[in-house]
Length: 266
Ligand code: NAP
Image (cartoon, rainbow, N blue to C red; front, side):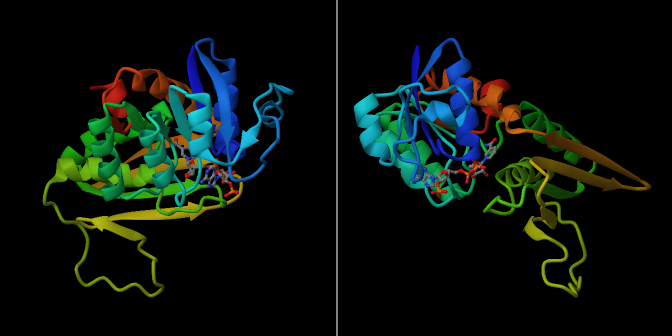
């Protein structure tokens, strides 16, 4: 049995991860950490009733006490970097879904994990359909390089644009090379009307509304035609198969990898 600690256990994703771990046959939920809800029985947060795992608020202490194989992190952009460093220092493999770390922080974590010989995963999107969307978008960009991205999320999401949209733009840029799209002398009558510029003229537009979960459209434009690749996560369960794959595969890696696609396609 793989021993799992969930960080961000009181949050929306944390509860879903605990439920998925609880239901899986090869994993055991040994600890639950969150800055909120200390002392609550974790099972009551995902309708399992009392399971004897109580929420606690100190990650390092929990890792030292429970000695898990993997710690899954769905916390906040402010907490995730320090949490992941804590995991590596405690000899625990991190599987991270929290978005918001910059490229330098991710590289630092990869380097640290390599030195420690610890596997792990940082994935801005655990939905397998979203990983396929990125792969197909990268392929489309080779033939239709003009592209804009619209990402749509629930209105409680703190960071914008989404980690998935950034990952999509990175994958597209790799295929487009130095290609530059758009007008140099464009005028924005309302600041931000054209979205954020990723680079090479690729615009990312972020929509935040109640009722949404996580959605993205990648729209390519060509002569007399457009191509739209769209992915929708309708509920948080959609991320769970990817999280469980990440946990299992992290056990066989010797460093942290960035992106679920590295485990699915490489
Ligand atoms: P959420 O409901 O706000 O949950 C985050 C939880 O983490 C909160 O209970 C928060 O407590 C807690 N927390 C904050 N700092 C902490 C710390 N230092 N240690 C332990 N717990 C801490 O957010 P969510 O909707 O579950 O999303 C969590 C993250 O996952 C977001 O970054 C989101 O973008 C990302 N996400 C990723 C994927 C993916 O596929 N990779 C999918 C969905 C969401 P407080 O309220 O007290 O701060």
